[in-house]
Length: 238
Image 1 (cartoon, rainbow, N blue to C red):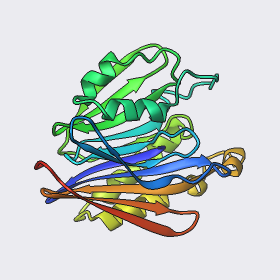
Image 2 (image 1 turned 180 degrees about the vertical axis):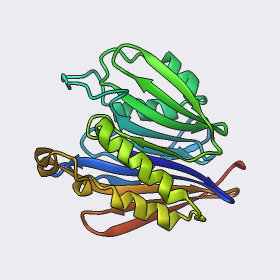
Image 3 (image 1 turned 135 degrees about the vertical axis):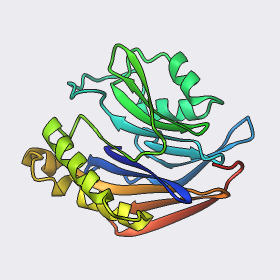
């Protein structure tokens, strides 16, 4: 939920997300499947502590990924009304993710942002604790997002430069993207304060590959060095 990338390559759309979490947090459950009243099915890794998620897709290839914080680092002031992972689940259960975000009562919810791919449109949806923001992104370009709660402007700037270098003269593949994310695990970032590294770890990398007729969902548990896969038959075409 702390480092997210988006790529559109010749035959697929690829989302990849690092989850940076406290070392003593319970492991997530993957895959978790939820059948909706509208006939669609949600797939996501489930956070056992709060029962929410940071990364969800449906069988149409619509996607929402959570990052903690909005435009800048904020001071956490619990208790909050609801987990941000539950908010994400509530939004992706709806027929229209953007409309659900617009209508959702976020007072009492800690700041966050979502990277959303819905109805072939790519969006950043942010809540700064007071105001909601919507930004439409070019779905034909690659994008990298980092959580403001852990990665300062200097780290984010360096990551952006590395991200641009990564794409030069290269036919991007999912495995290369995965390696890029492994390179930017929180414990490998030199500018991260040691006190943060003592408490947090990149515990997993989740990757979603959306093709014309199928979806491949993979969950890489970095603490146990295991990979779980979920293949989803896609209902509609990208």
